[in-house]
Image (spheres, rainbow, N blue to C red):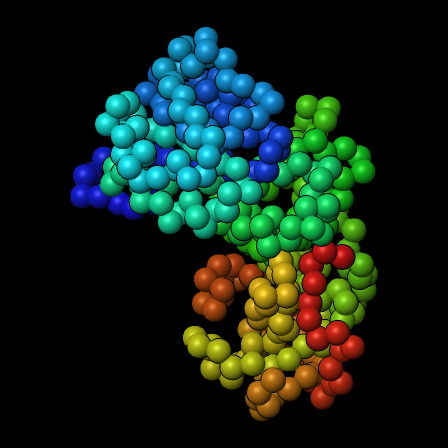
Length: 321
C-alpha cells in the first residue's frame, strides 16, 4: 500500500482466501466485535460474492458501507480513488479472492491516505491439501505475506502440526489460529508429534526430519536450549557471522520447486572452518538466544564433534511430512 504525505493514515485490513474459505464470516465478526468496531466509518470492498452476505442492518449499525467488485478488471486505482472521495472512510476492509492473485492487488495504486494495517488469510482445513496439490503456487501467495493465517473447519482429524510446518516454512513470522467445528479455537501448538526422541541424551535428527526439526527450533528454541543434537548438513559462509563460526544448514523447498532457499543455524567451530558447501555430520550443543543472521531469537550451535559426511539421498528439505 502506498503512503502519502498526510500524517493520518486510513488503516486497511486485507482479508484473503479462496471462495467459501470464511472471509465474509470473519468480516461480519469484526463488525460485531465492540473491541474492533467503535462506529468508525468503514468501507468494505468485497471482491467476490460468497454464500454468506453482510446484513444491511449490521452495516447500518456499524457505520459501514459496502462496495462490490465482481470483476478483477474493475479493481483499479481510479475506482479506489472514487471510493475514497465518496465515502471518506476512517478504515477500509478488503475481502479479496486469492484466485485473482495477491501480487496483482498490490500492483494497484491505492489512495495515498490508505496504509496496510493487517493481512489475514483464511484457509479451509478440509481442502488445504487438495489446493496445495493442484494449485501450490497460487495457494502459497497469500500465506507468505500474511500477518495472521486462520485455518477453519478443523476437527480431530486435522493435521495441525503438519499444516503449521507448511505455513511456517513459507512465513515463519506469521501467527496461526485453528478454528474448530465445535466452536473452540487454538494455535495448534502443544504436544507435537516429533519424529525424534526428545528424551535422548543426544537427539538424533534424521535427514528426512531436518525440516521438522528446523521449524520446531524456530518456534520453540527454549525446548532445545542446553540440549545436544546430531545432524547432517552443509557448511556455508554468509554475511554477519560471528567470529569462528559458519552457517550449518540445507536448502529447502518452501512451497514449490521454483521457491528454494537456504535454512540453518550459526555454528561455532571447534578447530577450523569446514570447506564451503561441505557436507558434515555435527554433534553440537544448542543455545537459545538472539541471532544477528536471523534477526530474532533462535538457536546457536557449538560443535562438539564434526566429521565429513555423504550427502543425503534427497538434498532438499521438505515441510509437508
